[in-house]
Length: 157
Image (cartoon, rainbow, N blue to C red; front, side, top):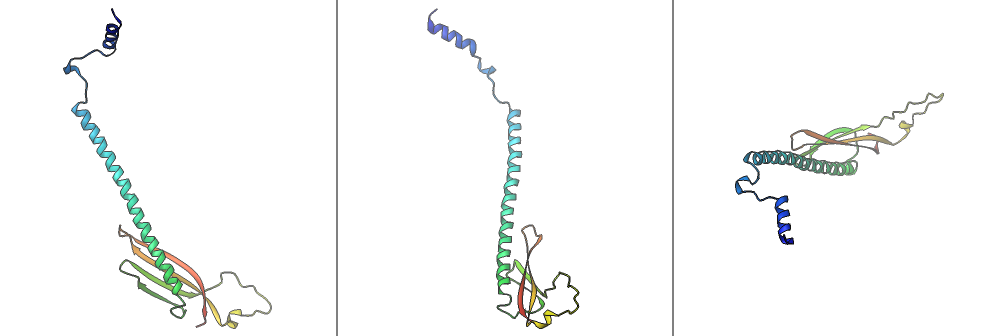
């Protein structure tokens, strides 16, 4: 036996030739199961991606609300006289605001002294607690809001 025929004989031993009716492939059932699993995986992936897109949209709405609130808060006491009260309005169809201005009350307890002096009555200005709430509805129709607080100095009223 020459070398070429021994190689062919060894290859046939390792991988014998089969008739076409015995060749192995995927059955129809295996293909259907594979497509079902693929469809389920694609459905789950689509839900994950849509949640990510919705989260980005909500973050954008919060960013817009914050920008509008900071702008409105910066105008308090400049465009109008700073005075106690509760006002509200709309930025546009999506965002509405509520501004609450109250006199600031020091939470620290006043010390009892033998000669108490009312410093607030001697001052021509007063400290005000300013609270601005911006609310909007998200894509899922839930009411969302942000609240910004600050202290401003204004004339006594």
